[in-house]
Picture 1 (tube, rainbow, N blue to C red):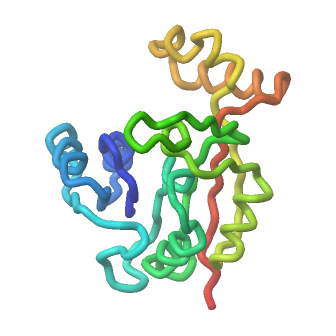
Picture 2 (cartoon, rainbow, N blue to C red):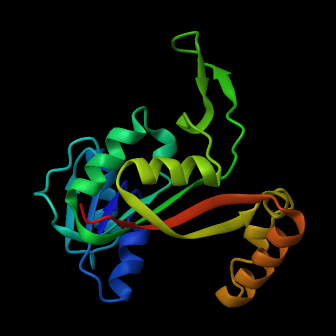
Length: 193
């Protein structure tokens, strides 16, 4: 599994719990160092850029882009590079904020409006599926997680010690009723070309 944009290393660590061999990669040297120090069970960490991954073609069975695409200027190029390193039939999992309102703030350094959280794009299911399809992926599953209204009420902090299945049930129920999911995730397969 290639975890691109591994951040703290938490997701790579979770994958190792399921027996996966994980390569965790991020663009920042300090971030990778911190992830490696935090989660030593992940064997491979590397500094790298999604636009030019330092791996040979068709190396990985799976690739994860968790909270990455919204930060990128050239999403088609990034997804094309992800497809390059995946084996035919390999899977990609992508998660992004769902229908995020991108708020721009006046930067005190450059005196220009810049997007909050460095998020450049907002996604709905049609946009994300279209981007994946154009990059050579067939989307097999779509998931919604988190609920914007529950987040405003502080639900994530209140429920952090709850059993995951109970939290997941309540979250799914809230998204069914309130229709305000915070995140969108897809699972897609690289089309053998």
